[in-house]
Image (cartoon, rainbow, N blue to C red):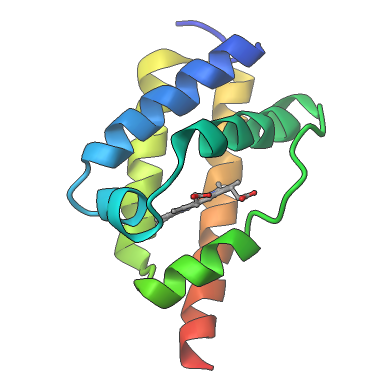
Amino acid sequence: MKKLESREDIEHLVNSFYAKVTKDETIGLFFTDIAKVEWNKHLPKMYAFWESILFGQMTYKGNPMGAHFPINEMQAMEQKHFDRWLELWKATIEENFAGENADIAIYKAENIARLMAFKMDLARRL
Ligand code: HEM
């Protein structure tokens, strides 16, 4: 299986992931109906985000946590949504890549998702 090692690999990973996400019964609606994502803007942000995490390129300049609060206000982002997000992320990686960066991409996503789920839950209680 291929290593996750180039910008092209990241673009392929992110594109394949969102192809699954937008068709998904559990989380697709967040992207298609709630946030009405502009893909030509969102996808380059996600390439930069993962490039920064995996290759230390620091091309992503944004606030990944902050972007989710307004979405959480429109539609609660709950544990089941994060579980599904992670399931699709892992499946997409495992279908395409193996090796250290593939493992790191899963591990980092799990940690960010855990923190994000906690923050979204807290925000709904305030
Ligand atoms: C239930 C889980 C999640 C849902 C439904 C969700 C949904 C969204 C949506 C709708 C956007 C906004 C797209 C736009 O700009 O129109 C977004 C942005 C983003 N998401 Fe998520 N997300 C989830 C989990 C995650 C996780 C776990 C990560 C990181 C591992 C992540 C990373 C990002 C990043 C980096 C952005 C771009 C923020 C920016 O504007 O700079 N998301 N997400």
